[in-house]
Image (cartoon, rainbow over all chains, first blue to last red; front, top):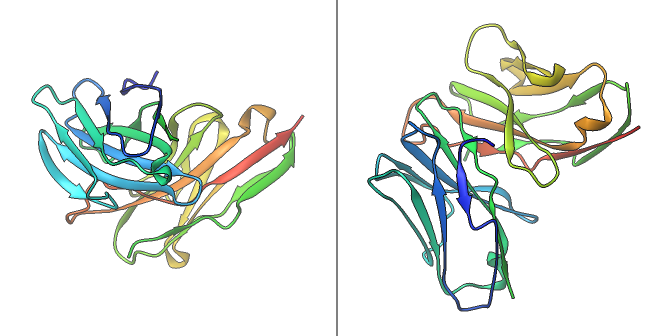
Length: 111
Length: 116
């Protein structure tokens, strides 16, 4: 157990639907990162939050959005889902030492 | 743009063989370097990291890596692999300072299969 908790572990949904992935960072970590892992793209950085504020944006689609709440947990919202959005979505957290600790991931399957 | 290259997509070894996985990055400034491992069905775990100092760094489970600045490389090594080392290995880089602080750029990963 890395201390980073992600829910749900698995999610199957249909095209056009919307899902929310949740992440609780390690205790004391202020930064949360979201990554997408797919066979064709590898590990792609999506977005970073630090203490509730967006810090950096990567290859995140406009259909995707995220936020970090006052209790530091984060949610990644994926809408108008397409088949190509099927992937493993990882959350990671860090406490400022530039070392990321990853959660177990949420596997999204879009049918 | 920042890029990280892992030259071996899949490496197959017998137990007790030596391992070296290549990693090169493209950024010319100061970087932090990492190797992560992903065992089947599990999350990414940090194997080792280089921030500064001795370019030869030792990590968990007998792994080590050498940072060669002139070659923009950070190769991972292990003198004698075990069946339990079967996993996917990711090299990652982040830039020191700037707006991408903390953001990791990952290589595509190398799948290591060790036969008993």
